[in-house]
Length: 524
Image (cartoon, rainbow, N blue to C red):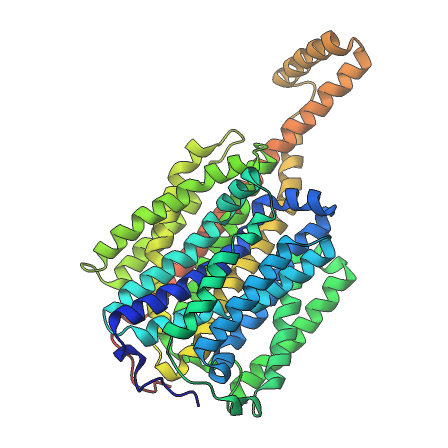
């Protein structure tokens, strides 16, 4: 077993613990930020690497597949290598592969390096959650969990903003070079200041390699299906169908194995602890909320409003601003209200913010988005920290490492599934709305006839050919109808997203009170 450093890590000087935690938070923020930092700059990356749209999607897919496989393994890896050296190895690998991504010479090298970046940087995410609950006892955990929650929800929200600004000011290469200096600093200082436990290399001999293989097949194929399914019409594609079968078989065998093995790679039995199970469900829902809104809003602004990367970044900036404002409000409110009350308030704001997107029209810009995004930013800040405390605070230290990987996996899975469902809705519902709108758009309608006459007059003055002007008018009418159908589809997606938070609020009713006290030494 991994033994604690000098008896109790929480007994170290406060300044050392805070500095060690801050260092790890920098690495955690980098790894989380890089999930979405390329989202608003894929067009520029594609131009630089001469890549098609299908190839470009793998710049994000490769990162997510690798990350989602490694995150659940981080608990076992930290026992083998120790938290300190696993974090250092992860930071070094992430920094090197970030540099390689910036130096990529074609799309294939970029996909390879992004996959390695996701795999090598993944361990920095769950180890920070574990460290917060090991280093800080009692009320100090409130500050630690608030910090983690803020970073976990802020990074995906501002990723496209930062990415769009960097690409506009310099080039897409700097999206990756940005990680070099902080990565080197973290890798250099963590060995000196982070002391949590000692390595136990003997665990390599009795590792759960069957569980690792089954989990990799399950999560890797599932992530591929979720990422590629909407674009390839799901199970009509042979590769999607094959991967879906592999994922289902490996997933079933993995669950059976994890529940029956003596020391499985992932502690699924922790889900039987009520607050951890409910906290993991809430992590799944907030993952849907955070990642789907980051997916839908820039896409709407690009497709419907034709905004540039920088304009999209400016329009989305209000989420981060209100989240930072809410951070101060949360720190004050946490001293006067129960954690569960703050959680309920946060989920209501988050869900209401998503619902307020539903009246969306084709001319919405940053002004119209301000209130929904303000509520979303406030909701994220008030909901994520209590969820972290609810889930991980309900487990003893002996189960934290494995459980932290599972908890973070649920958030990423929620995001992946939510984005896949949203992308499918955008494909299917736009056809539905287009056909419905077409039923009310015909040349016999006075408004339509008037529009076509004005278009014909304009194009005749420009082109001078009556046949061409008639075709141009009809083409423009098609674009207008399609634009409105697309806008209605986004409204549907946001409405479905808001319903997820109704489920989350119902789940909170079954949770036990959230406390900052340590759980029993070995609560099974």
